[in-house]
View 1 (cartoon, one colour):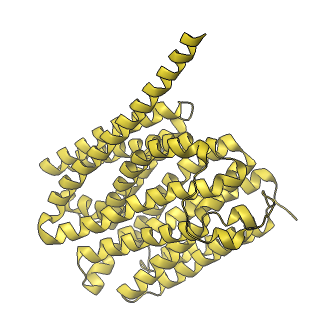
View 2 (tube, rainbow, N blue to C red):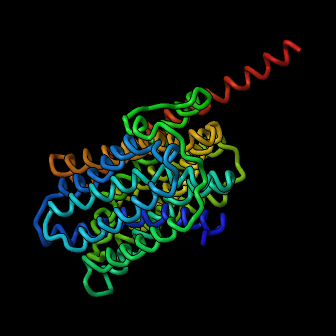
View 3 (cartoon, rainbow, N blue to C red):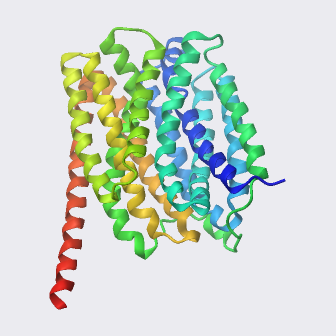
Amino acid sequence: MRLSKGTAFHLQASIILFFLAGSCAPSPLYAVYQAAWGFSPITITVVFGVYAFAVLSALLVFGSLSDHVGRRPVLIAATLTQAVAMTIFATAHGVGALVAARVVQGMSTGAAAGAVGAGMLDIDRAKGTVANAVGPMLGTATGGLLSGLLVQYLPAPTQLVYLVLGVVFVVQAIGVALMPESVTPRPGALASLRPHFRVPAAARAAVFVAAPALIATWSLVGFYGALGPTLVRRISGSPSIALGGFSLFVFAASGALSVLLTRQRTPRALMLGGMAALFGGVALTLFAIRHESIAWLFAGFVVAGTAFGTGFQGAIRTVVPLAAAHERAGVLSILYVIAYLAMGLPAVLGGIRVVHGGGLLGTAREFGIAVMGLAAVALAGTLLRGGVAIRRRWSRLAIW
């Protein structure tokens, strides 16, 4: 028995969604862990950053593996490893176990990212491109909301959400075993495990243009994921864990909706619109912090989420169509390397700054200004590339 191509596509889309949901599930719980184990905000951001760097490591080692051994073996191993990570989370009794769970979770996510993204493109290139952009955002939204509600209103707050996700990952592993393989295995699997940055010549210029947008948008994800729920509780004066999880839902759901509404736009238009919206979203967030307004803070989350969705989709669509089928997993892995490095490093630095001099609100202001600077670089790069393309067209017309 084999799954149809349509069912296999949706199964792989669900893997992106629930892997990212699992990555966000601990965020609303950090306050619970902090109260129980007595650690500082630096520890929170280190735990968050460890996940990002584990993803980064796995992308560098396993990013191209599925181009050689096939998508199915990589995804079966990754989904079962995610289930192991959920077990470690559910039985954690200290920071060490939390860090171990994040490492296992990050390695699994990094190994799966290129394989699942390329697998969807193998089946349907147009839908796969959209799913690669919207999947991480829907996953982030689902994880933040699901975790917040389960922790706030149901028993066993530090176990239940992980047990639910663990069951999902086991079911997904069974589904992957039943789906057809979408690529023909080829030699070079062992050589592909050597960390490398191999970008096809046709896509190199596009990667350089897309990189600043990826860095700007995913830096925002890192900050909101690590400190966003705490910021919401600080400004609102409410101890509600569900409210903190809801902030992640608003941010990510806005991004997912923007992907669906703007999927007919050109990649360049998405990059330009995304970076402009990022300016607006961060400006609203800084305004909310200054006036300690929860309403304006959530408005900033909506606009920033929209920027994340359009900017990330624009970056993906700028690069991925330029890669051949046997290069897709490797190219997607490189884009995710840039994204997760941008997500992890600022989160850790932000936590250090919160404790050593900046405070939560001061650090948020500094971080917002830095992200706006990155958006300006991305905006300039996109405009410059567009100008070069226009001049080339005019030169051809002049020759004729």
